[in-house]
Every structure is written in structure tokens, then in C-alpha cells.
Amino acid sequence: MRGETIDQLRQRGPFSCIFCKGEMRLKQGRRRPFFAHVSKCGGESALHKAWKDRIRITLEQRGLEVVPEAKGEARRYDLLITDASLAVEIQCSKMDSAEWLRRRALDQAAGVTTRWIGFKEGRGDIVRLDGWMKTAFFHDGFIDLVDEERLYRFTGSIPFSSRAAICQRHSLSLNDFLVYRMLPHGMPRRWSEIVARYRLRPFYSSLPMNVLRTPLYKKGIAPSLLPSICFLPLPALVLLPFHPFELQIALYLQLGDRPFEKERIASFLTRLLKSVKKETDSSSIDRIASEWAELVSIVGTRFFGPPHPSIEAARRSDWIMAGLLQGNVERE
Image (cartoon, rainbow, N blue to C red; front, side, top):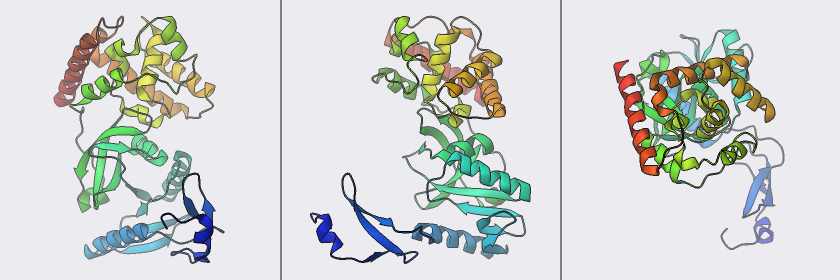
């Protein structure tokens, strides 16, 4: 297909989907031609089918009764393990958080526990998070992802951008998959390196001007010299559609010398979400505010205060804070 025009490609038609056999239409995209269904595809991808069969065979070899494409009370499941009222959903396509929450509510009402399996984007312990993955991390504390042709459980998600988080990867046994247990997780040892890269990059913000940029520049503060309290590793912020450091900087600018109390944090988040027309339930806001205030209380007041005099001083403070938080996790 390389070097051919869209008119030349159309001469090869008609085209059909390899899964549903439905008609496909060739279209010209911004960079290259692509195929689109004339009507909705009812088939499943080869990747989806391969992992569905692989998991089904593994479960059946352990003597479990597995029903593919099982019809539940409110919806259909990829696999249903009847012995344990446990469903398996293999999510290859994109899905937003609202749809994941809708399906989760239906499953809970039906008394079914669902294991969601996604596919990892990103290298090493960095995970690029689709909409449903962020919500699953917030509510379940883990997600199961296929990485390099194996299934792993990722825990301890700490976001460092609006779409990426540093996580801990655990090998997943069948017993862990069937019966959930809390897996150990802690503070990533290279957190201060992540913060250092953020301090040195060009500063820009996706938050409204009046929330971050305007107050920051009015105070004459260089973003690279902000105090370390603006760069806490906060797992709960994975739920929100903002850069976690931008949120923390905005709160620091708003509160100034006032304590980072739970009520103030909750009020800040509620107003911000309302201003950008994003909805999050009050219980989630309450939980985020609680975790934020608790982490602030752990690090204490030494990481507050005015901007640092130099980038070297800022980095030293970040290293000290990361070490303090790592020590706190190890004590627990």
C-alpha cells in the first residue's frame, strides 16, 4: 500500500472486515488512508479472542466451570466462572470511566465480581492509563494488564502526568487472580528523579489561567523553584483529569500559609471541577482530600515555605522528602 493513492487503493475493493465480514469503506485520513465500517462491527479482534481462549483453557485445566459469552442478569460477560460468581472482561478497546462505573454497578447489583484485563502501554513500571484504568485503580487499588504476553497485577499507582503513572508490577498466580488479596506496595525510589525532570522542563498548564498561571506569575515564582510540598506522590489523584503536580501547585498558591486541611482541599477540588465542567461524586472528592491531607501531615511543615533559592536546593529538598516517605512506607 505504500506510495499508492487512495484512488488506486479503491480499485482493489470491495473490502470487508475479517471479523464480522461486514462492508468496509476506504477513507482518506489526515496522514494516510484508513478503513471504516459501514455499519457497526459485531466481531471480536484476534487479540481479544486469543486471550479469552487462553484464560478459559487455563481455568478449565484447574477444574473450574467456565462459560464463554455468558448472559448475566443485566449484561453479557466474556467469561463467567460459575463456581465463584466471578466474571472476566478482556478490554482491548477504549472505554471511558463512566461506562466502566456503569458496568461495575450492574455487576455489584447482580452479586458478580469482575476481573478486568487490559493491555499495557508504556515501558517498565510506567503505565499509560486509559479512562477506565484510572477509575479502576482508584476504586479497586489495582488493575490486571497484559505485558509482554504475560498477565501481571499492577498496584501502587502514583500519577506523574495526566495520563501516566508509576506502578509496581507483580507476577499473578491463579489464586491471586481468583481471590483478591492486598499486595505490598510502597514509595517509588526514583520519585525525586521524576520531580527533578518536571522542575527542569518548560512550564505549561492545562488548568484555567486564573487557577494556576495567573497567580503563579503574579507572585513572581519560578515553577522550577517551588517548594517540595507541591510534588507529593498522591495515588488518589489518578482519578482526576488533571496533571497531579499542577493541582498541587494550584492548591499551594491558593492556601499560602494556611494549613492543608481536608475541608480546604475538598473545597478547592469541588470548585475546580465545577469551573471546568467535570463531575466527580462527593465521596471520591472526600477520599482524595483525606489522603492528601494525611500525606501532608506525614511530611510535616519543613517542605512548605517560600520558593527555593536554587534548583540544587530544590532537588536536595525533594530527595529528603522522598527518603522520608520511603521510610514511612517501610515502617508500615
